Every structure is written in C-alpha cells, then in structure tokens.
Amino acid sequence: MKYIEVGIGNTWIVRTETELADGSEYEQKGIIKPIILHSIYFRIWLGKIVFILDSREGLKRMKKPRHAFKIIFGLASYITEGDSRG
Image (cartoon, rainbow, N blue to C red; front, side):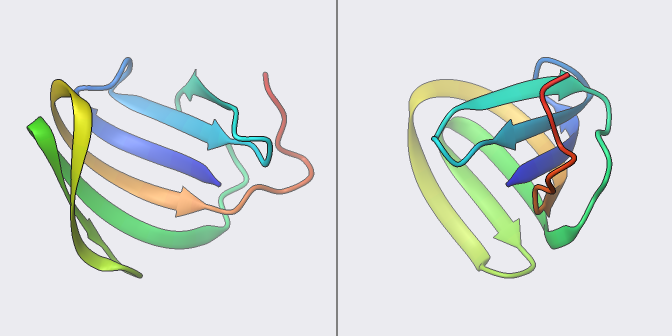
C-alpha cells in the first residue's frame, strides 16, 4: 500500500510512504504517482493515542508506543508494478 500524506508531524509536509509486501517500508518527499485510490483518511496523533477517520474503515482509535503530535490528511493507494524505490 502507498500512503500520500499532507500535514504536520512527518519528515516532510508532503510525503509518500510505501509499504512493501515483505513488511518493509520507505518514504519519499512529495507525491509519487501513479495513484490508484483505496481510501481517504484524516489522522490526529496526540501523545500515544491516534484517531483515524477513514473513508473505508470509519473511525478508529489506536495506541502507539511513542509520543508524537501529527495532523495528517492522506490518500491510501494501491501499489502498481511501476512503483519502485527511487
């Protein structure tokens, strides 16, 4: 899955994070195309609690092991064969 995110709290204001089938992940600055929309989400991370409002999964609350502050709007996209680590 590929996550295109805009907001504060990440390394860059606009970034793309790609999660590969083997569980590894990497991030890149900017928007990496192509985008094949899976869902749209809004995430607020306050301390160790993360609230996610997702167009497919609804409202979720999660606990994370580290403290952070993030406000993110994102698009979840399917990965295509053309996606590669750049």
